[in-house]
Length: 152
Image (cartoon, rainbow, N blue to C red; front, side, top):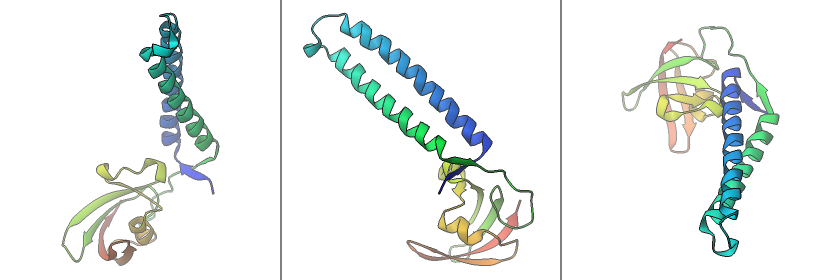
């Protein structure tokens, strides 16, 4: 199944890939400089740069492979129901806490910034619901019960 991403998310990944390419070029220069400094068997700068280059190349390969399998999604028009792109304010009925989350594609999830993946248990439980609905969501810690206060 392809990984979902928005156009903006894909642009961020392309920028990251470009930055990794530049880093790889810089590491090649560092390796050449370190190699010119004599015996490679005892050259810590050379070995550190070679290891950094190996890691950089692995990241480039992994990111490139992921990007080839990504499918761009468009945020749908507002329907009044929770969906990809919605900002939803919910109240935890057990604790009384109120949270606002933005429902995003998995690549763009960032819990610290209140962005949860559409494939997360909470978002899946909220999807298709609207303001006033009470939702029970099964998570690893048990069953959570939320009231949807607002959908934007």
